[in-house]
Length: 359
Image (cartoon, rainbow, N blue to C red; front, top):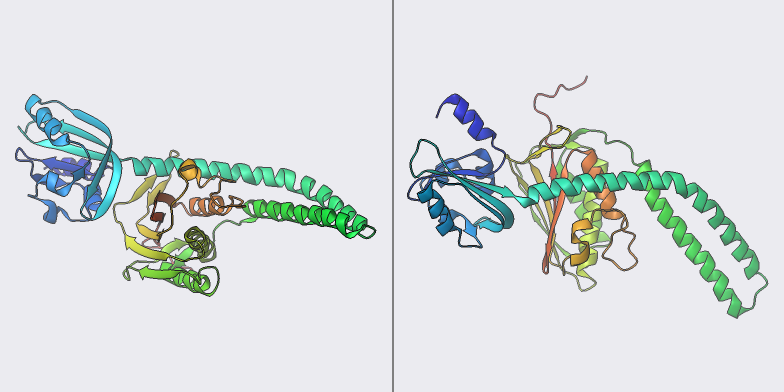
């Protein structure tokens, strides 16, 4: 392979495999190494259908494409490995020109495109909530204060039966004010103060807060990669993100308790490119996994939008704020949920290499 060919091969952004006439792996790109969590040396020579678990009889179609020297496109297949649960993928197959029997197989995980779309839409929705809060909060809170004051004055001359009604007016007015104050947090959130951050320090602080408070009934298990380099972000804001996710996991499991796993690992091939061309590598991964009942199916795709909540009396603002903070850090957040396991995954940038330290 020439230097140019090698550069093009390594630049393909989706997991790609060269497979010989015997269905053995000849070569993989870096994205495939990340997808398989294994190196080229380990994968080379292995049967492709022993490495990939596909929920459809694709092997016959793959062989027909080889025999007919044609391309093959299949959408929405669940593709997994021995090291990871299945992801919904598009599969593209094409014969390698100039090499009889050798096929190029590429996987396009829908999770990547879906997460990018969800993060962009969630950020836009959060920005809309900011504008709404700035425009309406003042106008709504002023008449609410008048309603509350009037109800309190009326209560001074009422009998006990009618007093219950004024107390309801006061309590509900105060609840609306608290809701507006939560919406205003979007506008009050300052830009991140970027600096090197030890993600395990943040996770430990959040874990200690959880077990002493809202998560006292939970079992929290740590699965840390101690070799992780520092992240690049605002420690206080990232702590707010983790606390919110831990609280959601605790509430999802209910009063009877459950297990929360906090997992960290490094994924060197994970990159983000937004529509505006900005972005970069996001190798630092944090997963918060609970064994609760899972997200309601009707809100699963909109969980990061403001005012979407699966909790009774929930405001639906916590995860929207989380999404905004992560987007401001140029990171990604995604969720995969099914009964018995809900997994929130944060993907963050590492401290820039060669960064000049200010005196």
